[in-house]
Amino acid sequence: MSRSEDKIEKSSRSIGKPILLSLIGFLVYSLCFLPVILLGRVVLYFMAFNTLWHFFLLPFIMYIGIILLIVSILLISGIIIKLFNIIYEPGIYQYGYNDKNSFRWMIICSLYTPCRKILEIIPMGKLKNVYCSLLGMKIGTNTLVGGAIKDPCVTEFGDNVTMGEYAVIYGHIHNYGKRTIEIKRVKIGNNCIIGAGSIIMPGAVMQEKSILAAGALVIQDQLLEKGKMYGGIPAKEIIKKPK
Image (tube, rainbow, N blue to C red):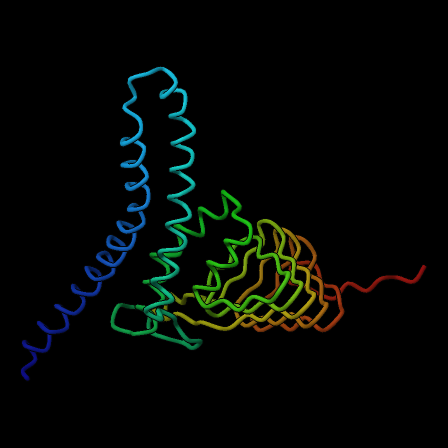
């Protein structure tokens, strides 16, 4: 193959991947509107909106439609990700459309980010756990997944874990200078507490019964040892003074 032919093939690949990414998002989110459209058809079948009380019911119907749309977006996008096994593995990869893991990460981001934003605004209780599980996150029993999980498929929660509001867990870091993306697993053990507004970076591990104070920062690959409490930026062990 000549150089000119090789360049044409590479350019066609670079154009095809962004189109494919946009097409995936378009198809998935279009499917999410189907239940709402069906609800609209049912409502119009029973209501002609020719009486006053029909219009009084309209706000309640719209509210139900919004909730149905949110649930549809979460479940349909999650089921599609689970069905087609769209996950990425830990490692360092070239950030671009041509790398398989990077492209899978982009697909997840395009489908997951809007859902994550919705869940940050409207708490959905156990539905959030179900959705994160569909994306590959391991979640133990009696666990509250609060805050924001940036990379569910490389994040693991044990049993009886509490994650406070506005806490953030990252599973990836970009290096724009080298054009790479580094992905690492984050493991949270049983009976851990993650304080509100805290940040946990890729590769971090919280051992069983460890506690992270509100607003603390756990740096990359940091180990929070069993039964100890940590706080500050970066997070350090908080030693209680004897009374």
